[in-house]
Length: 281
Image (cartoon, rainbow, N blue to C red):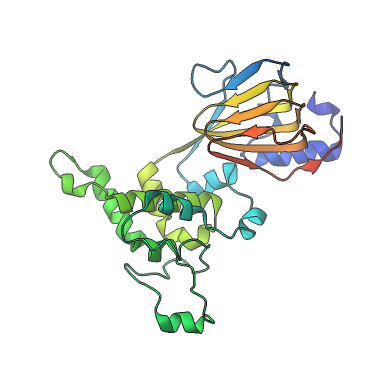
């Protein structure tokens, strides 16, 4: 499907999707990906992949959010903060999970280390217990964590094991990173320098096509890691599957799903960008 054959509106939509990756349509060299009926194709940044991805890299997590993050309209509808799942799964001692379940509306720097909400504060909130910010839930401030990360990165841990990050500190970094990409970034902005200093670089494997067709009983598999699958059109026939073993962001203008039900199998995370519905091609 040559780009020149798209309508003006459709081509502009596809160009805008590429622009979110800081790319233009000149970079799209793979026209159509077809996974034949009953067969499988794997897209991976390792040697297992027949097609090589475009690797995007940044040290700015705000740019990473633009590439693979949750759309703002989806963030507004959430009742649970992205970081809550990380804190709950870690079961870290001293973290108040009960009040960390809902997204915090507190601004950056609102919490101090070890702070807790008092009974009088609950009363002012109309009897409801306000949700905790990440800083309040973990008892860590952004500047405190940044100092620890800088010392950790410079340390020879064989000589200074005391400079190793604690489990609470590491899980706070993970939780903040997830919120910065998929949640209310402003609420954890104080942790942004520590997150970027800890991870240093963020990489995304990008797969660009004008069209993707997964035929009946065929499987398109994406490996571990962070992937962005961008196309103008994606067709999944009945029995076709998209299987992801990492973080997958699907960003297409038109999507046609099979009538038989869900077609995406994922052990981790899949996001889809806004798309226009279609009933056939």
